[in-house]
Image 1 (tube, one colour):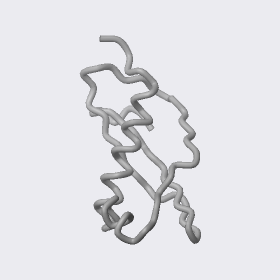
Image 2 (tube, rainbow, N blue to C red; image 1 turned 45 degrees about the horizontal axis):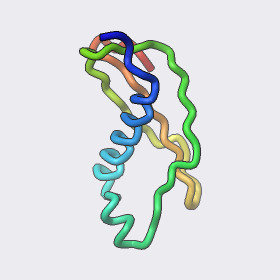
Image 3 (cartoon, rainbow, N blue to C red; image 1 turned 60 degrees about the vertical axis):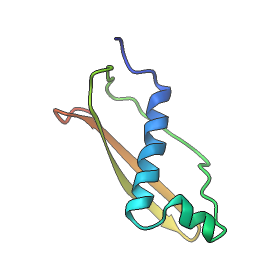
Image 4 (cartoon, rainbow, N blue to C red; image 1 turned 90 degrees about the vertical axis):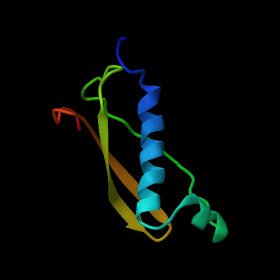
Length: 85
């Protein structure tokens, strides 16, 4: 196969965000139980390296900013040999 379609990176970031929130104790179910929502209001991507179908992509999620009700996450994507970011 050829290169990964750019839209997949956004989907992967969403999956990583959900997993991250689960790991820190704020699952979607907990948000709903508390009457909260977690909308994505903006996405910015800089494509530095491409991936292909067989690549394994690792995604590190970092809290970039947390002020009041605003939470901004940063995603670092690398492949098996550490290429990426």
